[in-house]
Amino acid sequence: MSVLAGSEEISVGTAEFVTGGLYVDALQDMPGSTTVFVVRGGRYLGSVVLADVPQPEALHALSALRAQGPETFLLTGDSPATTEKIARELAFDHVEAGLLPDAKLARIEALASRRRVAMIGDGINDAPALAAASVGIAKGSGTDVAKETADVVLIGNDLLKFVQLLGIARRTRRIILQNFAGTLLVDAGGMALAATGVLPPLAAALVHVTSELAFIMNSARLLPAARSE
Image (cartoon, rainbow, N blue to C red):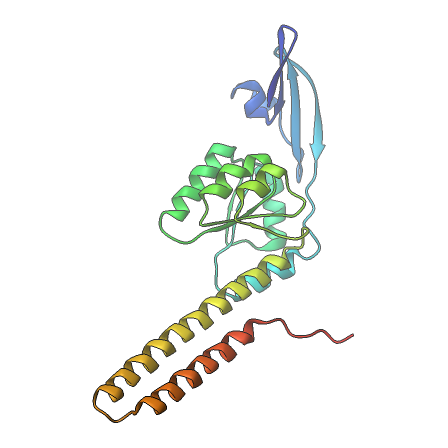
């Protein structure tokens, strides 16, 4: 990020950003952390060291997610050293570090062009990539821009909510397809039997009502189970 203070420009960000790609070797992140550098008018003023710690439920959430089949990607602007440490703890399938917002957007667009992609993000810089994903998911504590751009907003930051969301979505799709296929089968069979005179009108009405009741009961399986007090 860059702002003007009087006649001087203040830049805050990665070493590559604040120096325009120059003197990057002189400004390096500390191992296992991300350093935000501050430069004013070309003069180095200082830096802030940030260390990321995985959410307590992250490992459990990723294990549960992998059990359902999807590949997992970690796309981040953090330094490779920081990202490598987090990636080892959480065991992502694919890891890419040091991505600026436009690079993250390009990566999501490339993935979404050949498969369905769900992206979870919470920052202002995540908004373009959230919009480009097949399904954009924002954390409840994320920025307003991220939540407005996303298709789904999680309540809170618990990543297990996403795993539950994916399970509910897949179960809903499965039941919809079951009802759709069942309706086609019953209607096609009923019309064929009615056309040949095998199925009289009263019996046809009974079959129709019975099948509709069966499909409603099948859909009722989506209702959450009552919680015991």
